[in-house]
Image 1 (cartoon, rainbow, N blue to C red):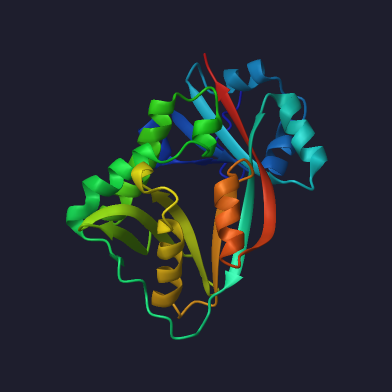
Image 2 (cartoon, rainbow, N blue to C red):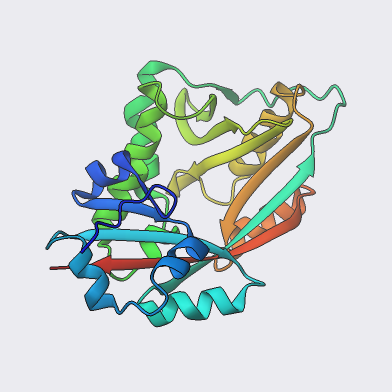
Length: 246
């Protein structure tokens, strides 16, 4: 049978594959369904020649037909992603004094915060992924900034000189600054650290027109934070996963 590695359907994710120790692919949902309109989960597993494979995709929440068809193939609905955006204020507000750009010596502290601070990411919500693996994904994700492999800027909030939270930023083009990852150390929750870092990002990046952030529908605290800071809901997507085993 023909192998399914058509790049228009399956996009390999080398970093996630290495981190999870299995082949991982992002799936173009509509092209996948066009190519495999009635494929069972068992048949799909057979295409990958007895390898463990992790497939993931996202679908606009308005597209119920595609979502149902993916679920019939074996995909499981894991998360509903919400995307918020706001215009960056051009007022001359200074960055909060407790927020600075990250330094190379902050790496271990930042990775520790990343490993300890997430519970509602799509990896943590997936019952087929152990929490220790999900924590490792987030820690490795943020370490990529220090390797020059991901992100365009990183800010940290400090307490007594040590990082209490971090904010990883991406330049998405078209004047959009994206909050790729944000986390606060558990012992600094509910102290305004997240707000402080986002306000600093706006102050330090006035060359952008908008700032964008994504979160999970179950993450009520993050939704409240973004709305409090003036973000408005722009889009929503279902996140679906499929784990194939030999």
